[in-house]
Structures are given as C-alpha cells and as structure tokens.
Length: 102
Length: 495
Image 1: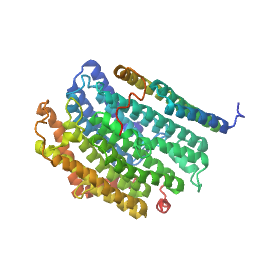
Image 2 (image 1 turned 180 degrees about the horizontal axis):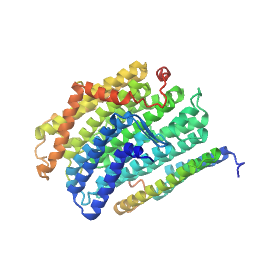
Image 3 (image 1 turned 60 degrees about the vertical axis):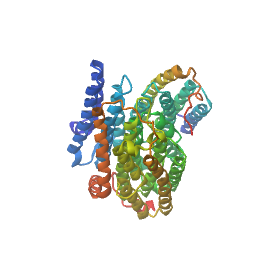
Image 4 (image 1 turned 90 degrees about the vertical axis):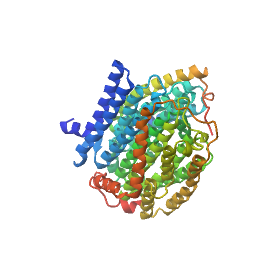
C-alpha cells in the first residue's frame, strides 16, 4: 500500500476533478450539474486523503468528513431548489432557467 | 477547551445560541415581531460582548481560531451590518412572504459563518465558516419562493459556489500535500526560506485564489454577481454585498499577512491583473445597465478592485486603508440597498431606473439619502467614500504601486458617470399617473427610515471627521499585529 507514490494519487484526484469540471460546463440538466459538482468535491476529498497519507496524519480524513457533511447539506438545499424550479418551469433544462442576462 | 477559550469565543456562541433560540421560538409560535426582537437582541448581545474582549491580549484557540484586535474589529463590523440589515428586513418581509420567520435564523447563521471566517487560522475552520455562510446564503437568495427569478438566482449561486468551494478545497489539499500542515503559521514557516514557490504550492494557491475570488466577485469570477443581485430580495443582496465579502476579505488579509504572500512575484502579478480587470470591467459594464440592482452589482465589483489595490500595498497602512474603506463601503452599500428595500412594494423590488424617476419630488428625504450614498460610492468629498478612497491612494503611493494608483484614479472618473446619471434620474420631473400605492402603515416603515437616517448621518460624520474611526482602527490593529512573529521585511517585500 505504501509504495503508491503521492503524485499518482494526486494525479487521479486531478483527473476526477477535471472530469467533474468539464461535465458541469457541458451538462444542461440541473441534476446532472449537481452530480458533477459532487464529483469535484469528492475529488478534493481524495486529494486530502492522499496528502494525509504522505504525512501520516489523520487531518486529511477529518477534512474529508467535513467535505462529506457539507456536500450533503449542499445537495439537500440544491434538491429543494430544483423541486421549486421544476414546479415553475416544468423542466430541468438549465437554459430555461436563464431569464436574466445582459 | 478551557474556560478562557469560551470567554473569547463568546460572541460566536451567543450568535449560535440566538439561532437555536430563534428556531425554538418558530416551533412554538410563529410571530414575526418576537422573532425579530430575539434576532436583534442576540446580535446586540454578541456585539456588546466584544467590548469585554477589547483590551485583552491576542488569544489563540489551538489550532483553529485566533482572536485579536483585527478579528474583534471585523466581527464588530459584521455584527453591526447584520443588525442594520435585519432592521430593514422587517418592513420588507412584513408585506411579502407568509412564512418570514426562518429568514432571521438564516441571517444569524450566515453572520456566524462570516465571523468564523475572520477568526480562523486553519483550513478546517476556514472551510467550516465559508460553508456555513454559503449554505445559508443559498436559502436566503431564493427566499421569496413565489418569484421566479429568485429560484433562478438561488440555483445559479448554488452551482457556482459549490464549484468554487471545490476549487478552494482542492487548492487547500495541494498546499497541505506540499507542506504537511493546515495552520496558517505552519504554512508560513514551511515557505519562509523559499524564494520561489514550488509548483505544487503555486497550483494550490492559484486554486484557492479562484475560490476566494468567487466569493469576492472579482473579475474573472464575477459572472454570478449581477444575476444574483437582481434575483435575490433586496436586504439579502445588501448582505451578500457586505457581510459575505467582508468576511472573505478579512480571511484573505490574515492568510496573506501570515504567509507573507507578497514576497512571491507570481501571486502579486495575479492580484494586480485581477484588481485592474475588476476596476475596468465593473465600471464599464455598469455604464450599460438600466437596472439599479445590476448597476450596484457592477459597482461592487469595481469597489472590490479598489480594495485589492490597498491589499497589494501589503503593509500595515494597507490593512488600515482596507478596513477604513470597508467600513465606508459597508455603510454606503447597506444604505443604497436600504433605499431600494424601502421603495419596493409587494409586487417586486424597485429596481428599474423608471422607479426612481422624480423620486426627489415624491419622497425628498429618501432621495436625499440615496443621493448621499451614491456620492459616497463615487467618492465625492465630504462623504466617507472619499476619505476611504484617499486612504487607499495613500497606501498605494506609499508602496509605489503607480500603475494601480493611476488605474484607480482613471476608474473613479468613469464610475462618476453612472452614479451621476442615477442621481439625475431622481431629479427629473415625475410622469403623471405613476404614483405607487402605499400599502404599509407608516409605523412599520419607521424602523427602516430611522436606520437609513442613522446610516446617512454616519456617512457624513466619517466624511467630515474621519479621525475618530482612524484612531479606532489603528488602536485595534496595531498592538496586535496579525503576524505571529512580527517581521519588518514586509514593507520592502511589497515593493
């Protein structure tokens, strides 16, 4: 286990993060955008764990638990908002929810 | 945690208790007035407790928090602003939503988040404060459920804020990976001898700047600002423009002073570009707007650009200038949005330029206050905004940031145009038959009107006699210098 270099772990986290970022930018369904944001947050969590393994400290895992908690809170607010939005617009297309611009 | 730690954290604990109490009261009896009084009392109680801590030594609650003069100053500013905003919210929400009580819980929690930000000295507390602030803001922005744009603004802010938090977290993880510590002074110690940042650290700091820049709404992370400002209820907009940005700026100052970030050319370059871009984009885009809330949104972007000039000065004078400017900016922004709040009726917020046509003839006092606020935003003498801008210029000249100073002066001139345009609209003769119906009993508006009057007087007082505020800021910041081991080379490094 210990002979996985830190760079490899960080690279994996970076790839996951980039995938999440790209998918936030190209997805048009709001629920999928929320999922992509979750991927980005969890990629950051993975990076914390990799970093903590390098220094053999528990701090990174503590941060990961913080991130999980925060993501849960964020998603619950987000889903409530999405329900509200669906009531009004009858769609989850994020382009429909773009009345203000310019 | 020892007893003395509790003593120092008491302002935050009072806020937490206030939020819990409000929640319980809502569960027992829904009464707008009671909730409002409980909120105001917990904010005031928390503020009064700061006087207990004022003369004391800097205290560190290992490893998360540090309470020093700087923190007390910023917490006090945050609390007072929240108090003023909740004063003005009462009349606003009285005529709107049927369930208006939860608003106050969210305001208290968001204030708690901002206060946590300014006292944190560890990534974990930074993250915690930021998220308490953000998650409360998502709900606050979309609080008026019946308005379509409210939901849109809420979901936009939620997605973008979550992306920016992810950037911030990944940046923190990278910094942690290369230093092995998450406390600010630990990071400072590990790069104290370095002349240049290692690549991992540089990437980490860059990603953290993205996260911080989003909250501060500086260019190029400003896209959400006008939409959210427009969609959110007017008091919440005032809150986003002041408390949320002030908390983040306080944190940024603490972090950068501690790690002496100005030694590194790359970081200075990034902030210089961001500052200049914010000033120009904010002012130029504001010229094209016809919506008052959007004009104020773009104006806030440019004001954050001005603040970054003082931030880049990076010495004690710079910190004092930022703090002074923040006080002036808070007073003016809350005042301006307070006027918008007061003029709004139950249909929607008063945001179109048309709503302000002939305001001077219809409601002379409100128009006078709004004029004073706009002049202060533009930086006209005799207002707090002028002294603040002067202070920033002094800080910039002192560290020879000539380019930034020149840009600031140029942008002040551009900014003047749209503020004056707004004032001119108010002075025009009103069109016949556009008399809005007064729906409220005047007694409800009394709290808002009184608050606005106090803000306007404060604005003029600071503009005419700034020494009092300057002494207060110097007294609180200087003895407890924010850096753990005060170091002289900051001044030279900033050049």
